[in-house]
Image 1 (cartoon, rainbow, N blue to C red):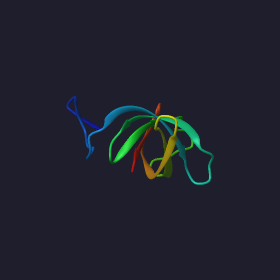
Image 2 (image 1 turned 180 degrees about the horizontal axis):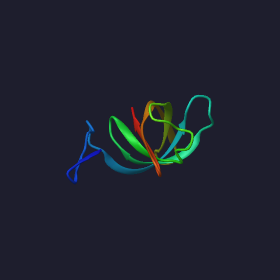
Image 3 (image 1 turned 120 degrees about the vertical axis):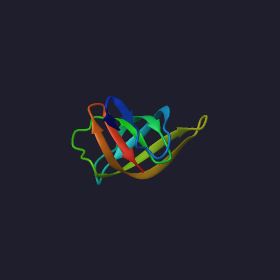
Image 4 (image 1 turned 60 degrees about the vertical axis):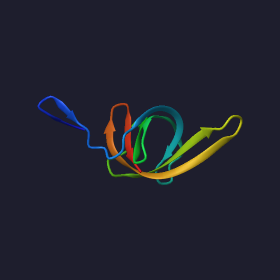
Length: 93
């Protein structure tokens, strides 16, 4: 997002929906980090995670753990770190 004269401009292509979903994130051969996805769209997500060691443009894998009433289904997607903030990362799928 950018600011122009106090107005926030949203450059996202797809609308995001607020969620609170358990996800796991990894990059390269690193171990999985347990995280929370805070918002989600067809094109990306914001994931609450300590961003130390991550950089903008880095390829990552995100695994969504979907609880289907007694069964947990894992859905893996490839992404890229689009932005970093103090409380997490914006991921582009």
